[in-house]
Image (cartoon, rainbow, N blue to C red; front, side, top):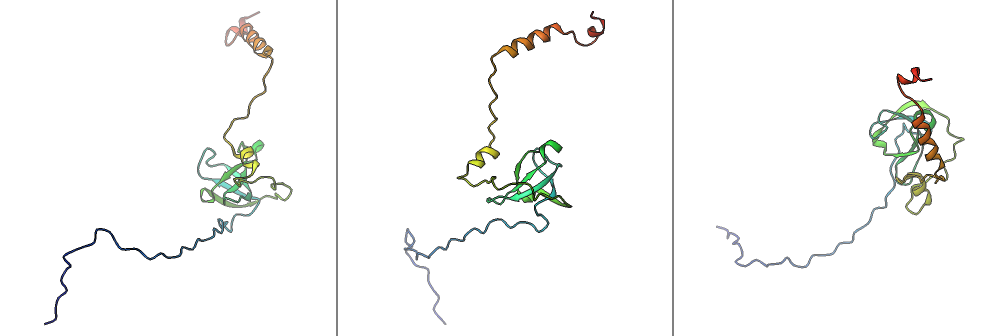
Length: 152
């Protein structure tokens, strides 16, 4: 009969020194853009405040996000960064070759990131205070509703 292996009577409290292996860092290759998304493609947003809105794709930013615009005057969607998983590409294409997007970037060292993509509300111009006084007077003097037709 062969001898059976007997469990040791003593186990070390700590594991022995581990062999160090060289870790190779993968270089990030950036986000691969879907074939159906090219500059000028009309996209449908699937999430967020503008869910269901159609927007125009302008370019892909360094972070991999898509730069899209409504345009704001057409449908109220401002210049926005959107992840491509939250859009559906349509077959409609628009010519955006005349649009200059070279100054827009979301790199961490860029000033444009703070300018275009910050959540800080723009400061309003300070007036001399006369406009508040005038607007209060006009509000007091105007009758509203049914009383307006009877006033003379």
